[in-house]
Amino acid sequence: MRTMQRTREELATFLRSRRERLSPHDVGLPNGGRRRTPGLRREEVAALAGVGLTWYTWLEQGRDIGVSATFLDNLAKVLKLDASERRHLFLLAHERPPTDPGKTWCVVPALIRRLMDDIAQHPAYVLNLRWDVLAYNETANHLFNFEQHPPERRNLLWILFTDPALRELLSHWEDEAPKILSSFRRDYVKASQETDLRALVDELKKVSPDFNTWWKQHDVHAPCNGCRDLKVDGETITFEHTSLIIDADRHLRLVVYAKSEHD
Image 1 (cartoon, one colour):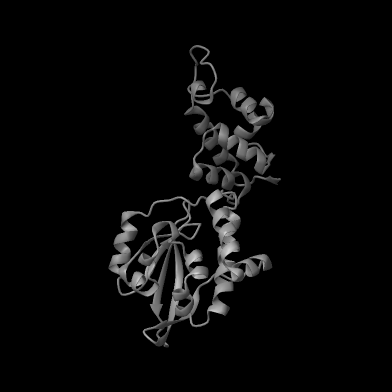
Image 2 (cartoon, one colour):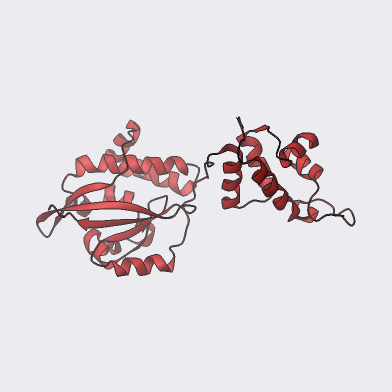
């Protein structure tokens, strides 16, 4: 539990504004006739959040009191905050962002698809938290043969451990695959409760002895940025690669490859 410092006044204003935009009907309470001020009453918010009226009043008045992450989560639900508002609440109260539950489902914005076409000379593709390949440009398709896999199997981790062609493409597959898997493990932790993510891991354990062995080792390496040697048309070419976050809330990233200038 931490004590708020510079943000107490802003927190108080934020809480009042979120409370005043809700009606009793929004939270399943009877209207109870006309109200002198809009929104919920403090005692209603306090009761729904499971705290005393005096304590909540002090919080909304900007007094120097500590709050827990559990209470902030409850309060965010009571005030029906969206993901951005919830993060803002935690930052005001804790001076650190909360951990958002990871979600694997998302849609690639049209702008990102246009961007990949604009950098057509560089292989580029979009991954979600489950590592499904949601979009790619033609250069990436030529290099990784994404279209040879049906959409339901167009998953980078699945391809890495089940496609002999990708194993051949990676010059040092035995070294690279465990590192790539360790990067996936960080995403798995963010969304381990998602049934589709757990199903992917469970299935790979059954079909890939390498995956099964390395998954049990629980290795965690640095992010997979840097250089990677790929065998292209019989020639080994060094590519630099990086991941760019394009939607933090939906855990979307754009992966871009570029031939190394030192190759």
